[in-house]
Image (cartoon, rainbow, N blue to C red; front, side, top):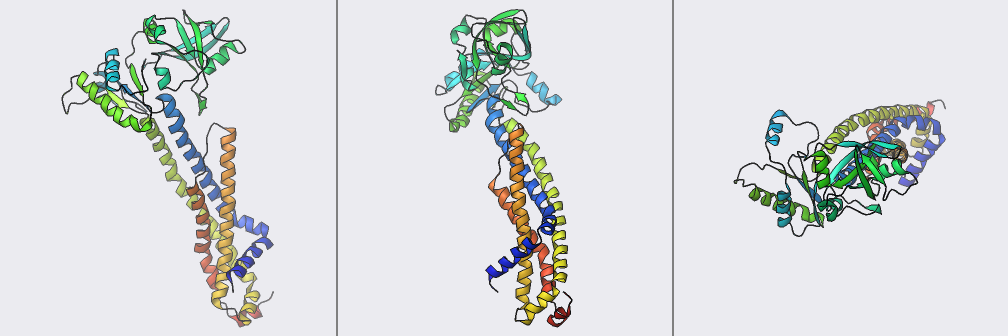
Length: 414
């Protein structure tokens, strides 16, 4: 019996019993759809965190020289004691880094933790809880801020301590609506600032806005809020490949400037956004550890259902098997026929599950802030899983059909 005939008969049997075939495959369809959809969402979020959140916090092709390391969660007591003894990052440190990295695209200073929040008012309108950052002009380039209206902060604003501000897109949208914000005067508490620019929107991630902030000259900022405990040096390199060597040069220059001996622990941190990315990946690894268990349960249940349905099919088609053996079909042909039907049935469930999972992932990405990226390996795994279930749970019914005695089979009632 040719392979084409075997497959044709297998799909004909599936088509002849559509409803039964669908319910037979429901467990596999749900399991495979779950696998594809969850992996797509997790992979999409991993990529989005790396490309957007990390870039929004530190910048693209950038790193920071900080008093405190980037830490997701709380410091333990010992770590906090060591960090609190570190000296503050100063303007002299910024000059040290600048001298060590003449090839940097931009080197800026920004106020660090704790970042003050303020209500910003214009006429009778107020927007609350806006993060206020004091910066030097190059910081805007490090963070890849694009000015959609007006101009950016300049060194002149910094030197002259001008009361001017560049605001985020969301602040401008809520505060001014149809009014051009450039040249308008807003209040941060009791202080008045002229709006000189609006930053293009960076959007939201998981409900967190990256457009609700105000940038003012660092010199003016320190007049209002004082020096922060964690003033930060932000460095942007022209290419991603230049970041690691630049970090090493900056660390060496800082150690020399701080007169640290070889082997002595650095009293500063040189970091990229890898800590944020690694923290997120550690969370998704927990999800990845749960997925196999959930999928395995669904697949086993689906496989058992397929085996039972195939056993029932053997019983229903006993006379057919007897006729085939009587006209010369070998036991091997009968076994291949029923095994092919089981594999075709399970593979169809895998394909339907892949399409369902793909559709669900697309729907989630469309109606929510959660991104989704379907990966080729999850699709291949899902389809292979379906075919594997067909082989694993189709062998017993196929062998039982092949072992039927043709005389007994022919006596069976139709």
